[in-house]
Image: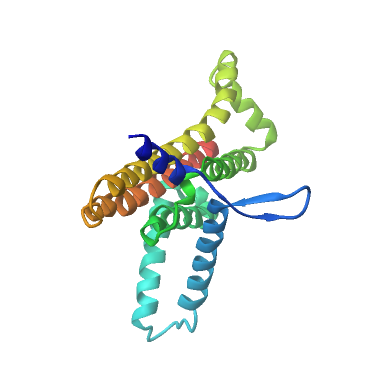
Length: 228
């Protein structure tokens, strides 16, 4: 049991890959390196898949791309509404990143979303966008007034909600990804190599993509609520 715990803790630790020799040394962890890999994959795929696009007589590749992009855009616009269309590119980027981050464990990498620092960063970006959407739609004065609605006495609760939302987004994503990672590592340790494969299909693919959708779905709802 002690060896099992030790192996599991070693898997959970975010190891420092290298140091940047400035400001006394900046640690670059494994989650950061894997995030760079995901970013490179998305950028290269975007360049390769969007080359030689046509207006007429489109090929099969372009048809698939337009179907996927159009479906993703329609899904997000259906959640956030017509007034939030300008935020769809950001939301689409986030869902692609989290989706790739959650399934990258299939290729031998540790999912960066199991690092609390990554999920905190995603949550902070989302909450800043949410509050900015409210300020842009209502104006600074009306945005501040909205904290005292429907009655002034609940203003502290409304202010507290600004901090609760990113915590909720962060911990939900982190907890689910970490839990799935722990279960898979336990199965790999105590079971023969082939048996964990069906579980991997669920935890790494299905559950990972669901968590990406839930994060973006909640962010979209909060943005829509901020603009209403």
